[in-house]
Length: 238
Image (tube, rainbow, N blue to C red; front, top):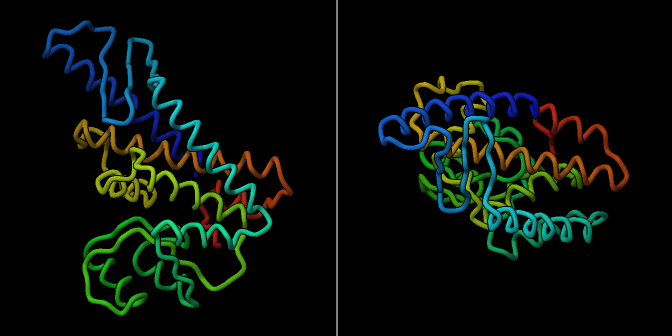
């Protein structure tokens, strides 16, 4: 899964370069440099395909990673407390026996579920909260089983990024990312420039979460089965 996501990122970067070239020609800009700012990050592209995030965003990412690492390492032997932390910060946690079947039906996997709309949201609301609504907030949905700290850390990292309003978690980015994961993504040439940027940020957040749990596993007792499940995108179960 990790290699697949990196491959998609390279495709997106290639198409992004083409978009830059067209914009430069249209606006009469220097052909070697063009910047894009999405509010949280700033990318600078040049003729050598270089891309850097501005120093402010890099500093924010480092601080967020440090916060996540501190919280997870403090609870490395008591991962259930991570769920308590999540609920204390306003995100509902549902532990139900049929979680895997429900989530399979709505096209999700166990763990952190981003806000949904439509029929899938209605199914989640009816099954988990007995309410009629076509919208859900973010939530965790798990089977009532012991928690694997490495898989949980992967999901916790993504949740933390969401509540910190990092780019890549908006509705459009999530929709495009889901298409990529389901191998239903459209050819890059059919996407708008803003879609390309949104998808790239969503892919970045997923890679960061994967890298986080890989590094965490190296520092602690290893759980190769859980780690491989995450890296291979085999639907790791919590």
